[in-house]
Image (cartoon, rainbow, N blue to C red; front, side, top):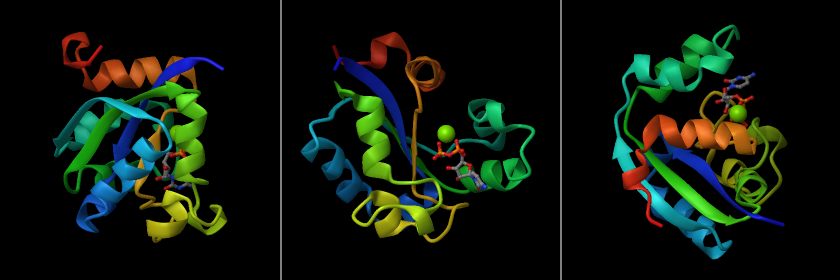
Length: 140
Ligand code: CDP
Ligand code: MG
């Protein structure tokens, strides 16, 4: 067990459905501390940079169009095993396969609009946090 930081994004569908408070409550109830947070409407170019690892995928254009379609809530979460814990709370990428009680099972309509993003490993967490937050924006 180790204390980690991870990047969370509540995607445009989550903001539209007014479940931001509910999702943040799930993080806090699970013991994840919010260390930084902002609501922003990202440009397509900003989203393309964030999801560059998926640039060759068939869903890239749909994903980046959707992620730039409305405001998102981006936060840095910290806690024991924060990366895995957040992904557990999120549920599987495809909400049809997500365990009952997970965020995606409860709120997502389909894989293209699956309500939340979460980093998948320590290296990607560090890169993703640095993409959106300056060191001075993180609470110590
Ligand atoms: O978000 P997660 O890490 O669970 O999945 P990913 O494999 O990193 O894919 C990034 C995002 O692309 C997903 O959250 C989906 O929104 C989208 N995606 C999609 O639209 N269709 C797929 N077949 C796979 C992913
Ligand atoms: Mg991913």
